[in-house]
Amino acid sequence: MNNSSSSQKQNNRRDFLKYLLTGGLLGFASAVIYPLIAYLKPPKQREVEVSSVKVGKLSEIEKNSGRIIRFGNKPVILVRTAAGDLRAFSATCTHLDCTVQFKSDQSILWCACHNGKYDLNGRNISGPPPRPLDSFRVVIQGEEVLISKNV
Image (cartoon, rainbow, N blue to C red; front, top):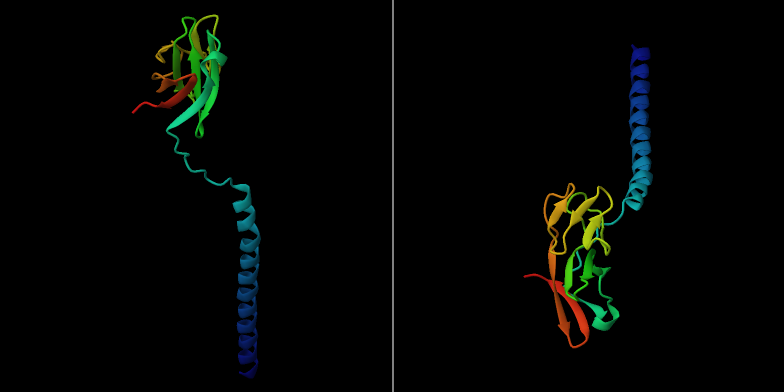
């Protein structure tokens, strides 16, 4: 009887040490792995709230050209038509969020990802884009060109 009680005490001690070491190893692993995962995961950026952006002087923008402008965190494309009209649209294709570009030879906005095409009013005219581009308001104050949200 004495033997069985001492072997049971040893089993209790072994179980206790097993749980203690397992808990310690799990704690150590989580203390190493969690900061590593937190470091590798990029931080979330808040949406920058912008109401308008200065583009530059009207005389610096050539006719029949387009340029990408940062509007907060998002790209906007400003197009000056051959007639001299200014138009601004979201530069993000409505299909898969690729960046559109102005093709001056065809007078269209073109998405290179899947050959999506938009007219100079932002309407989708061919390809897979499901809806038109979001438009922005272009304001000329003196010689300065400003782009603002359509409200």
